[in-house]
Length: 221
Length: 407
Image (cartoon, rainbow over the protein chains, first blue to last red):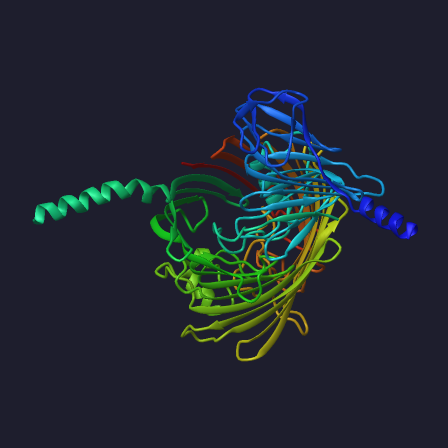
């Protein structure tokens, strides 16, 4: 009986789930957050926020938030909700909802643990483990690791380190092209232009429509 | 009462117009191109184009894209053919209504369609390219895409259609009173499988063309085009394609074309790219006939040959020394595929061998502003005078400067 109790206790400990908190590690310019049911507060370094918090950055303002080992950089004019931050014995699970703007995420791999990280937006979802990337819902640039960029129809391309890809207005994933990482997605028009001239694939065969992109998913290769 | 109704309608229009206009997208574009070719004679061409375009959402999730242009072209030549001015030409280069059906078969499928005048191209762009009137459908399911086209090319300007499938087409092209292209219809189907094996894509297309003209010859053709393309690591890209053409002009005939490309891209070195290409089109030789696509395009930029009875092996390099400026240079060796005179003509009677000559070209492109670009290119074709062209055949020089502005 004692053994059974110990086994049950071990099982429940192994499957234990507890909420994580996010910590502001860098704040520059006007950065505010709103906790669930609370008012807006200016963000300060070392401020801790929990699930449901909404973060907003102003013009020329940035913030870096750590959720466990994952670093999330909010670019200027970004609004982001922390939808899910769970830690288990097996790893961490983080879901962000990007209302507007752009985020850069660094999701380091953890030995023996899984790190699930998703950035959702009204039109797309970026899902990744063990890599670094910048994503605005349509355009993807990968710092390290390999990421799969998915369209709603299930078409995907593997995007490797120092590569850029995007989903065309026609809903087709462009063949990834080698790029320099210096400017990230700041000059996304130039990256798209470069990708179009570099890519051998026809990315847009039927004219652009506003409808098709309902969910873009990127996954770790 | 009548005044009240008018006033109400006017008020409604004023209230709704800004919201309606806000969904429109429209603009103007202007381009100017000055080019010259110096061989035995001096030829200069001046081409100006003003283009207006309009794009708007349409009911039922559709979209309308419309663009038209005014075009002027004048040529000056010291040759016997003299100079020519093509009067102002008004034409539509795009009139397209497009829509989408999502989740048609499964929740991860989408069907896109469009009707009207729009650009159509096969994988290599060597069978058909440029505008066509017709319909296009594309069905995406998972990592595969299935496409179908159907259209008519007889309403296109003959210079845009560039149809040279038989002697009737040649007559049509040289007839100054004829504006439209020969009456030909086409259909096409294709399938593409993205990342079928690693980062490699595979696909195939089938095109068919029917001669609807009333000329002396009826030439109908079919093209089968399988292709492969992909990436090798981060820096290399490649592609290979082939076209098998079968047709009938009273007698059955068979022709082929093929091409390869290998490109090295190193963005860290000022966007450096090195591209090696090979393209081949059969000539009339033995079992083959000269390759005759729906739309005939040039080979290279300085040589006078079109993509028929030709082999081109070339390499070019490009880089971007500063932001918004790119420069390129390249060269290619040109060979004829058969023992017949190639499309450029001018061979001596006792010409032997295959090597036609060497082409070298260079150019630069500058983006002055986000919607304004300047392009310059120049090149030369040095004919093989040792055993192909008559001694004293001059080098063919070309230069072109173009500017474009979008508002």
